[in-house]
Amino acid sequence: SSAYGQVFNLKHLQDFNGHYNIGGAGTRGVTLGAGKAGTLMSNQSGVIVRISATQKGVAVNATGGGVDMQLK
Image (cartoon, rainbow, N blue to C red; front, top):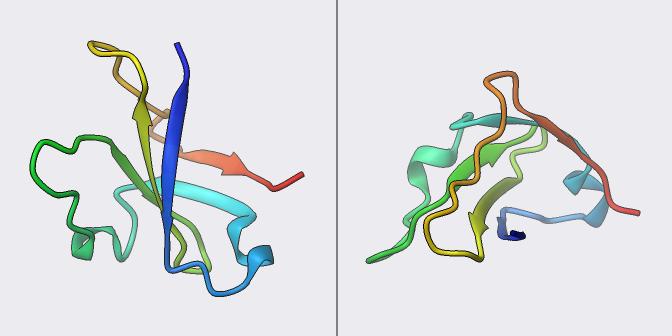
């Protein structure tokens, strides 16, 4: 299975890098829309990412400690 994501509040590309916490500050203001599901995470720069699985029945879960993401 694989996953994809949508990014919100990204003002500068370098702001994407960092540690993302599940349901972090600012994620409560993001509307997923009808039928949309996913895991909302935010980092120290206020960037919000919604991660979803591409396969039905597959849940995308990060650990309670969050996840580090960095652009290559």
